Image (tube, rainbow, N blue to C red; front, side):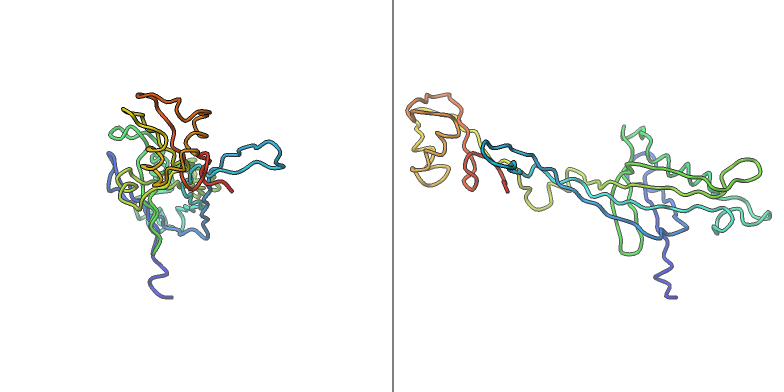
Length: 232
């Protein structure tokens, strides 16, 4: 079997008081699953059989898997009475459970990175379940299954450095100044004075002259009249 297939998964703490700590997953998962969802807002429209759906935002990716811990077969476990228990199951359970605790430096649970071969997933641990199926004579866990759900974590700096984010509502607000008019505002925003109607409708103006310096007007996105965003 090629050596690359024997590479073990690891969980690395990326920040906080335990930054740099690496937890070895000595039994690779037999399977894992990714899940991603989007959030939509239902917009009821009179006379239609179903509401229009407006995209609001994307949710974080989630990675879920089962990790298996076993003192009797893990290389670093108590496989022999002549060898010290370096990282028994109980210690490994505690190390992973600690990643859900509030870090004293971050005031939040620390972000981690799950690495396994080509996979690199930066996340926080959202949920951890454990099932113990074998015990030592003194009652300590000897075999356990940890059900882990990782939730994607991206820093603000990383998100700002990535390609331009899109907003579900690209409407703008503009303040009327001096002898401004809807016609001039439409020309500045859309390059077409005839688009003043779009602004008037978005602000419930029956008379386009009913504006005064200091008034705030909503300027809807050109591609979606009325500012409805990405409607399907």
